[in-house]
Image (cartoon, rainbow, N blue to C red; front, side, top):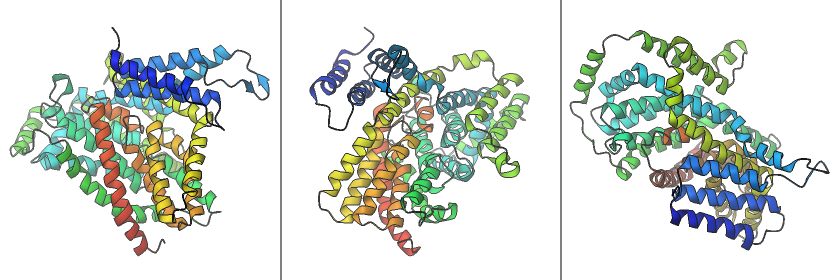
Length: 493
């Protein structure tokens, strides 16, 4: 049997209940409600591991194509000529999504760092400096992400293609390999630090992830440009609570998922001896390092800053793989054997497709309006009302596979509701901006870097979700207390 009966039955039951039993709410189209039924069923199947996540994704694409839930009855007042063909086109639409291919190609490029030994060399260099304790290695990874955050607008590129290969190399150097069942040695802990450092960095710099500039734009529109979160304003507001969250995060994860290897007193000597064994950098290592630096410069937008030449982040990633193939650092066989990349492309495309159409069909807008209205009618003061708005906004990210889509769909409505409740506009703008970063900590599909790091199989899905929820609480507490006080000191409210 290709599926687990119990979780499969639960998933099917949930989907059928929402589709056939729960009445379609007023203001929601039948197509949107039925797509929600499929989405909930698929997510339940993924959580319960009814089938491998890639298989569940294929099932999702198949169901959307067969049911036609994404196809409206009329387009521009005219009946759809070929609804069956349109349904298939919709089901496969996200396979043309640039972010998804960027993720997959980034995974393939990371194999080059491992194959050439460059990643291992970088890992040993880090171990030689910070390797006396596992906690120190965790902080080194967090520092690396933070250091390149201001000039790396793609958190996928930063966390998935730059820091993650180094993290894997360090883990492997300690014999921590999920394929051998040794992920608990050190790899699980480092993978979680790798990811959550990436998310906290997104909170600190407006240029650290794609949704942040959108937040700036939406705040300006909502306040008639009275509030403009410049790069400096954003950084000044977020740096203190962000750095405190960054300092606490590795410690918190260390206690939640304690690595088996904690003390490594001989690690520095070990790493230096390994570096001596490796000798001078070989040809392929030098080429890989050159490609790595080219990618870093292009992802950071240096050509645009210096010459006004804009190069898309996904195009940059394809350039990186092409250079690997042209120089022989990687072969096409290497790319084909990178099963995690192809698997990620399929399952992430399915989830993004369903999330996008939930938004296009108006379900997310309806949900936002319903929560906004419900909180407003509770008669709470602005502090309590805004706290509920922030929690609803942040944790609704469980049904999103894109931070940009979430911000686009919900930020404006929730920010406007908070202002209507009487919240100081600048204060609530900063709280919502922080929440827009924190929400990406929740799931293994919450941002572009999550499927890359999750795909290395060091962390199970349940562990990932548990850690994500715990980190969201920690970061909310930091930004909601220290952050609010710091913003008062700055005179922002």
